[in-house]
Image 1 (tube, rainbow, N blue to C red):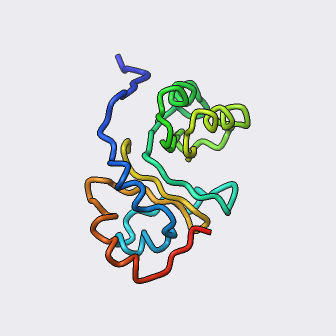
Image 2 (cartoon, rainbow, N blue to C red):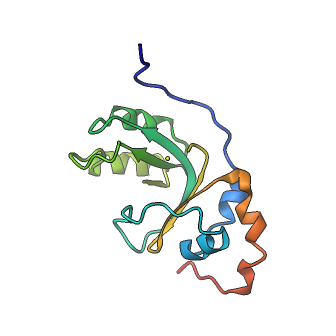
Length: 152
């Protein structure tokens, strides 16, 4: 018998310092410096192209059209997390609307956009999922000060 719903309550999170090392740096520059291995499918794009997204991935893998686990994730995610919701590629119905988005915002969730603990960075250039065990920010941060990144 298959287990329908599994919740992994505890997972190793990257340090806040490692996550913050990506703040203000354009996604395209981060991906170029990471060997272009972090980019997520370009069909995933921001609803607000001026918005930036940064936080630890809190992942949800839900059956197509079912948002029950997403409701639970809204209560379990920590402030600053980015909920990454996979629903088997289904486009048949929305899993998140205005009410759930506002609830997430009130809980301090950094965004809603799959491997728990990844660092999620997003802007108008795209979305990245970066494995913290690669210490990518620390590995490549010496290249970033050469350029003048602007968060505005």
